[in-house]
Image 1: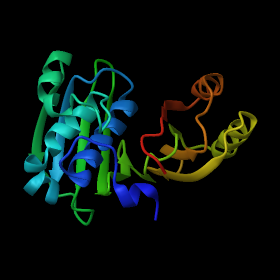
Image 2: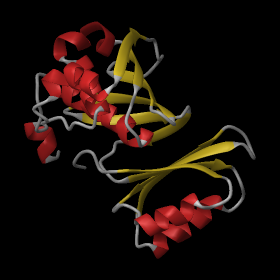
Image 3: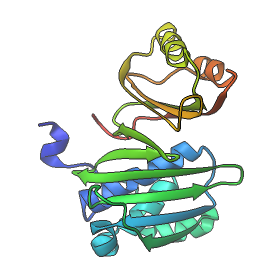
Length: 221
């Protein structure tokens, strides 16, 4: 059991699962979009849909989309902050099937790009991200996480691993999913430290590399 499990996260309340975790799910989408968000369509599943508004889940999700941390004093005013920032957010109930009851699907758009994230708040401010851009993933944002979308080709994963090793970035965990053989694929790699900017730019320049993101560490692991 970690210190976080015993004392809970540093946060603006009232609920670690419905507020701090929800804010971190918004933060994941914020960083993966990589630009100022303009519109957000947020599906709330099960407990998030039934009890979220009373626990501040809606505010926390929007705060995360704006880049606010769970302990940011502006979290209770997230709707007003969103209006100032030009972000329009709407909520709806959604049935995501057999997933954790505190799960949200976030469809976030900016001026040039968009991202879709499905993630769960599992308690104590801890999250699990289960899907990015429609691809199955499994990470908790407790480590810097590199996400790459590319055309499935023999040798890509080995080339990525070689690049990470040359940059001194150690792999903690890795998940890979693809639409079909030779189709689009998404690689999510949890690292002990972020990939350097030169190494990240090197990977971005590869033929067949469509989308790259270096998600920062968003919680203690």
